[in-house]
Length: 255
Image (cartoon, rainbow, N blue to C red; front, top):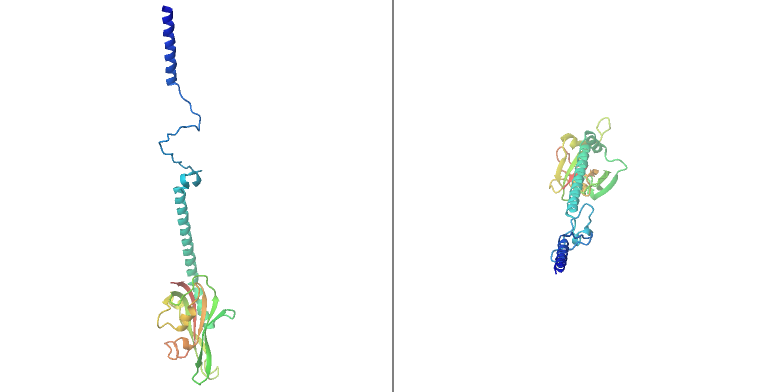
């Protein structure tokens, strides 16, 4: 009996010892076989530097990428604005240089070169004091083309300019009387600043208004005007009555 009891005790201890070893044994799980509690939400993927939109739930955009794109767009806009500002400043400096302003004055005295494109703005038939009927043209000559916005009929425009009128000579010989000549009566060279004006100004000569409309910023024009289109029979001191006018203008800004 004692032997039987001893065997039973040893067997019991072995069973209990085996259960205890099972409780404290480490359970190993193969990679990729992690268990997920179905009661918990699916964890969101935290994208790293190599994660694209397709790797994010619902294809949501990466806020960091969006911010970077916005910063890049802002930087590009700032760079473009700076470039435009630098170009405008360089152009203004070039157009306001003394050599350029002297060139405008010289064009006012000599007229447009022969190869300049002529744009006939208006034509009218005028009766001279002697009764002769003649056709007079208001024409604009494009000496240099512009590349900016066009000047509209109601625009405010800033110009560099030189204005001249033709002074008629006498009827005698060259030794006795002076020949016709052109006289510059106003210019940016003289004023040292550009002229800003509205094309809707009531007392602006029609030749200026009609000759400037359609010009691009940077364009250099020579407007040849009969007396009819600028101050007419009355004139405007120092411009004498019935004098032809020549307006040399370069539009440098418009609003």
